[in-house]
Image (cartoon, rainbow, N blue to C red; front, side, top):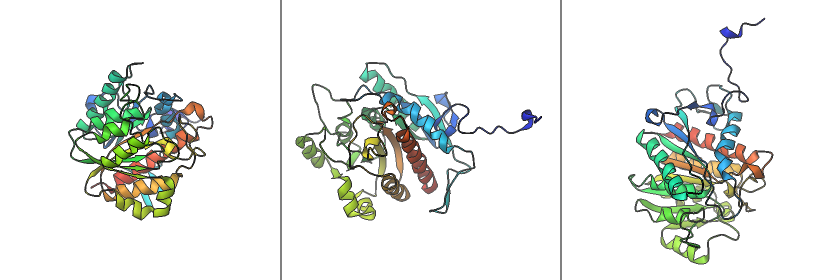
Length: 316
């Protein structure tokens, strides 16, 4: 009989607690000591159609264990590089508190979580939740120098107010653009009939937005698109999973056909990460109940891990 007490724990993907990437869980927010801290924002009260993104953080975490074989990093043969290798300092601090039916208090809790991560010197990575969680996330950067918002999304999310609502998932980019330290937005993937009316598009352009559809980006090519993003400013990255085509990301509340494929987004963000600092990330609108194969959550987890690998590899 094998004496398992003398063997090193394997910690394979299908055992144990499903933290993001099976990185260390740090429940004490006063003791964050990492380069990147993952926090969940399981809030979906801002949706206008299908809800369910409150279960996104849990589903993304579980999916991320697929990529956590503990092999000392992730070797990428195309790049001939080892990402997330020895010395990678990522922690999962759990979720922000959410007070059901109370948007203001819930957003305040998310903002506090992001501020706490930043105060610890770590990069916040927020797992949504609907896209309204971006509002408190960007608000938590109000003391940071100039930032530029890079948005991957099917929808512009630039509604000022609708039915008295100013902080739903269709308002997020308008609220971001209003912040004094936000210099502009690159809104990529925008397509089809949008929740934002023409006056919202006009306002976005007046407030410094560069709006490109998926077809326009493909026509321009990667290098030309990257050159349109201001280089002399830090980047805040917000990824709505419906920016991807629903053939690979069906698990979302507002799917829109004609979206990005995986490598189109990864290569764009990898090029930006090589060129300048990405100081914060949120990935939102994963609603796992609409995807029984779980490929949407797997896509979200794989994309985030690959982005983090490149960010940390190219950091100063």
